[in-house]
Length: 275
Image 1 (tube, rainbow, N blue to C red):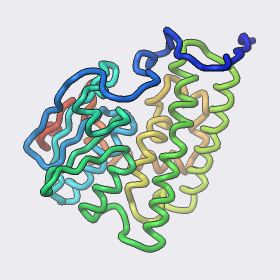
Image 2 (image 1 turned 30 degrees about the horizontal axis):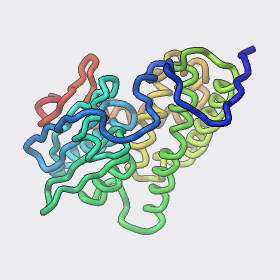
Image 3 (image 1 turned 90 degrees about the horizontal axis):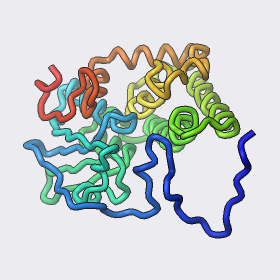
């Protein structure tokens, strides 16, 4: 049994936090060093990494291009393990120092957009695609987009952290977040038993937001052997949806943008970079 921790009256930051991402965390915000961001030729400048949150935006951009919409963009790699997100240029775009962050230079003044859900809405509204303009259909897409924004931290920062990244395995947090993750998988599975896409009959930004997180888990690309641990094959309808979304060419292309592994494209400036 793990030793019980008694919190002090006043918290102070430990000298070492441990875990895979321990060096990133500090109790203060703001830039840690001066570094300007690069800028390419297109109006849309994306600064990101191919994490689930980063993939949401690149999948949408590639889907827009696949639909014949002029949404060309430059995507610049932000390597979070090298602390690029704490450079002064990035912090100017996103004071919260998290990827992805976008700057739209198409108007008289640049527009900064941060938080992945905000970027999805901004681009969907800008180009009039993958988000109904009004009414119940729009409300349902927004319901599920914000479901993802509120639920995924329990999957990633909760289950993923304690199961795969924490410096030691602790039974209580792993059980607590495994329970919640399986509940979320059941929510998705029950919903997808009744409709082809998350928000209904239309493929939308809700699917693009949810797929990188939960599709990655179902396909065994996240948190080591978590797919086996959580028995994801039990969620039949979710599995069907994941397979269909994974087969979309734009999804496959979007997942490669700002990726550093095999077949990854760390910096993307035109469709040719992915071809």
